[in-house]
Structures are given as C-alpha cells and as structure tokens.
Length: 105
Image (cartoon, rainbow, N blue to C red):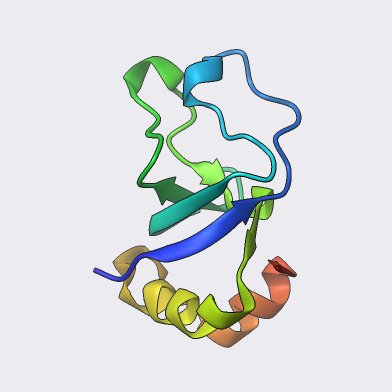
C-alpha cells in the first residue's frame, strides 16, 4: 500500500471526543495510509500511521483531509493512493483533487 507524507496545516477545533494524545499538531509531519469518503459528513477523511482514532473517539473515525497539506513531490503518490482506496472507486480522482483544493507544501 502506498503511503503519502503530509504536513498538518490546521489543528484547530479538536472535537472533545478526540483526546489531545490522538489529535494532530500543526506543522508536524504525518503519513497518510488510507483515504475515506464519509457520505454522511460529505468529507474526505484520512487514516494516519502516527496517530489512530479508536472506538472512544466515535463518531470520528478519521481526520479531515483539509487539515493537511501534501508535499509537492508527493502529489503523484497521493493520486495513486486515492485510486487504491476502494471506497473512492467511483469518484473521478482528478476532480476530487481539484475539489479538495489541497494545500501544496
């Protein structure tokens, strides 16, 4: 499975269901291991190698992709990871990347 480096660009508004030890920190680098589409919340979520949300964080099961910037040199890997994530198989990856308006770092 492809893993993509990213940089936390927004650590504000931590939900109280997520403890500080499971929360992301601005300007810290993380590794995206999976990307989810949350139809109820209409957001893209990511799973990270360094911190994982557990059952006690419910209803939160992933971090919003908008909290992270993707390194310019990792954009192709990010696109490949999007294609590999089966939950996104019916979504046009190029349109999704444009819609996300990802910050490139």
